[in-house]
Amino acid sequence: MFWSLAQARELIYSWQDDYNHERPTVH
Image (cartoon, rainbow, N blue to C red; front, side):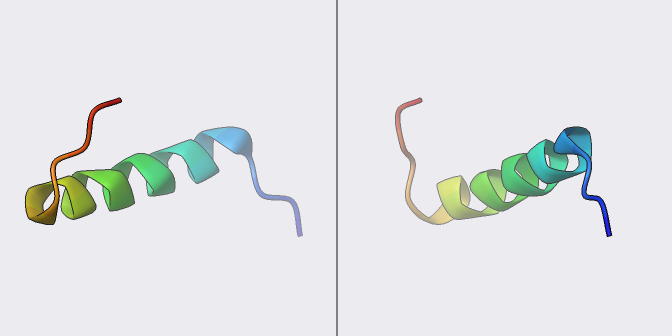
């Protein structure tokens, strides 16, 4: 199974967006 970097980044950005709604963080 190969996980593309684009898919990983999309998932991480989506997770970060949800997390930032709870705790805003500076990038």
